[in-house]
Length: 245
Image: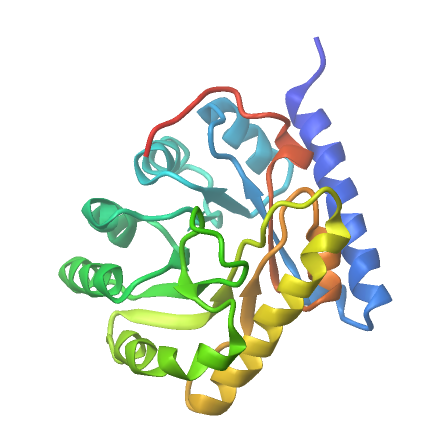
């Protein structure tokens, strides 16, 4: 029987190398990109193998599943647990109390709940603002597919950024799934333009992080400016079970 840690380490290092090459091809420093290994719908044993393979950032989509894993693996110091999936308001307390970073803040309502729960827990949660750049009804995030309407986002975003227990660090997006990675490029370019727009509108805020790119298109995402890429299948394989939010 093969060693699962060795197999995951090999794929993990392959992805890191592809990230390095993609960054260099775009004139970027490879160390400016961090790899989030997505362990959603994987048993805790796989998450442990990922950590033993050398990964320092694990991404989860479902709060309860993620909390179960991070509590089971607390012995591994220095590991960051990122919530990358849509967070229902009723799960806000779990996220506020347990995760190190949130990629998917998608509404003022959720922001308010997270801020309140973080205050109660005595924590500040680094977070990214999620934007829908493809116009898909199935995707979460503030509507950002029409650049002409970006100015309409400023009022609500300013309220989010005024919350004292959330620390906005940048943007996140998920483009429409395409048949090849190149189809994602225009959407990555659009969120990069939105990042520049918001940096001008809110010069005192930090929008330096850009979370985009998954197993099928992370190299293109790196070429277009991603600082965080979320890769699961290419490292840990297919999901091992279905999970409910």
